Length: 244
Image (cartoon, rainbow, N blue to C red; front, top):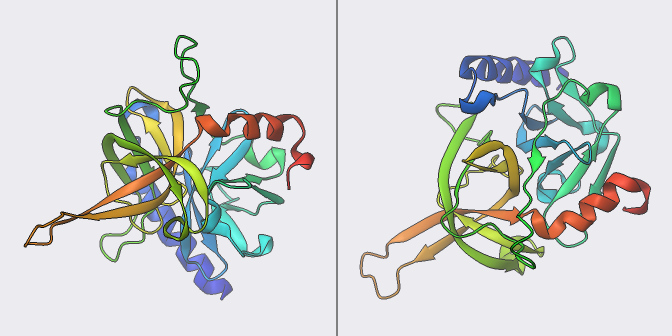
């Protein structure tokens, strides 16, 4: 099992190093990381935010996982290619979780700033429909493998809840690109400034055209909006032990 994990780490390292720098100086392996279990399987994607200093992902990615069996693969750290969280805090309703690591382990990692809407739009908790966005992560594809960048726009706002969304409940964006397995936990970034994160990829939604004999279907990614979670993140920054 250990050998399999090391082989998987080696393959991921090759994929990450082959991608190179992304526009606006974003880079897989320094900004966005795959979450891997002890068997070397990619579970999802994670990313670090600057304030609070935590790594975010989708809760369902690490649900039921043993801390010691979870690894965040970070090739940019040289010899220390993987980190194991010391603690995980899950949002009480949204499909979003914060992972804590030893401060020395995350000091070299790049981070994203949380998007903040201007004060002239009081009570507005989501970025508008039509906002250009991008996301990048580690989808579980047969061929070719490796990281992917997705680009699109926000095409709808809605409330994600119920069994279709794993029993979670949160304000969501419908995103104009597909969400493959492994993309869960990826950051939703403003295309205008890719160092600003406004959401976390959490799920996918499928529509079928009403009355369409061809049964046309469309699959879109779903992202949990981070603005409504601001208070949770602020408490997390000040008193992380208060949130379990």
